[in-house]
Image (cartoon, rainbow, N blue to C red; front, side, top):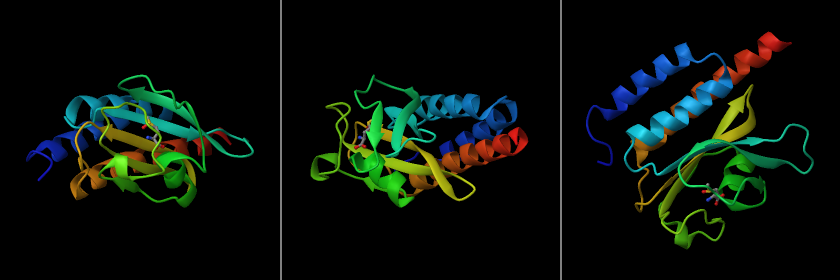
Length: 165
Ligand code: SME
């Protein structure tokens, strides 16, 4: 059990409220990083990377984040765990980053990481990246929660892009 009982429901409830209150997808993404960073004790760095529109070759650009400054503000899709998640469109969970040759180090304290793609109309537009100072911090419940957050952000971006057209 990685998450204390009742915590997930409380965070999901808070997320629903933030989604209702946020005036834009950008505001919502910022609020999601704060919520997860504040409420989930093992989530020591929480941030979005978004694909730069029109960039060729594609590149992930650091968006809203909470936690220590990172040297990785732009990540090509063939680099890092971030690049792997964005290029495959699949969640990547790494229990021990020291054993993953793809890993780009942000902080010496990081032990495990989860990266979840964000989709708009079934296309990857970015991802939600979380680092932990604890090994194997992201169990099935964490994965479900982070995937839910990424989905809520994607839906909001999708509805924003519809109203803009
Ligand atoms: N560790 C990531 C780089 C981003 S930092 O974690 C914030 C990676 O391997 O892609």
